[in-house]
Image (cartoon, rainbow, N blue to C red; front, side, top):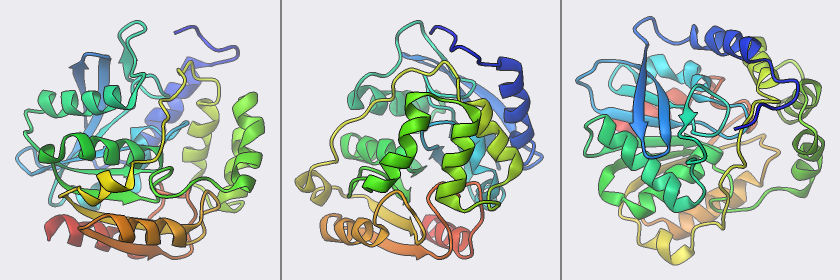
Length: 287
């Protein structure tokens, strides 16, 4: 991939490592080979515990954004958080062999599970990561023990027009100050972890490829999904209508439990620990 104008790889790595330092002390870095290149996976928790694959959101989210949840989840699970191939992070695409379709993304997740010697795993995702996790579960349900979706985007409802309008300057001309302005608008000024926010700024000009997008899963496919699902929406999300997301999930998924996380916005997840989130996830995964 060509280097984006103004991208500072050193500053990005410093910001990445500073957020990663918030993970539990037993963390370790893994490199898994996939058909799409090398995938960096940040891991913690007992190596013999059931695997839990955590997929990050899009943009500059990266795997390290799960730091606020990692310690609690690692009490009963082997937490495994990959950086998306072709997106900001430490994964390295194999030339131009980055995922280009939803099928490619599902194959990438399967390759990660293969590399971890996991026939199946609990899988969770936030935002765009939840979209990937849901599509993977629809294609490989036997490999997903339980699935949790954290304020998922484009799974059950579309974006609000105001959200897209506020995001447009950042998407058209990525720059640190535009990333900060957008995130402060969505989350509320002063509510983001400063280290996490600096990582988002450092990722503004990362040489990422265009993310895979596509239609929302078909209702008939969702109705046929034989996997237990926990869907949690952010009450203050400016991304979409949280109630509509929860209602449509409840109307289409046969084995779903929904919940609302109060006083938190879309982009404040998962890098914050709103009341009830850890309890919801632990209970669901242990169920």
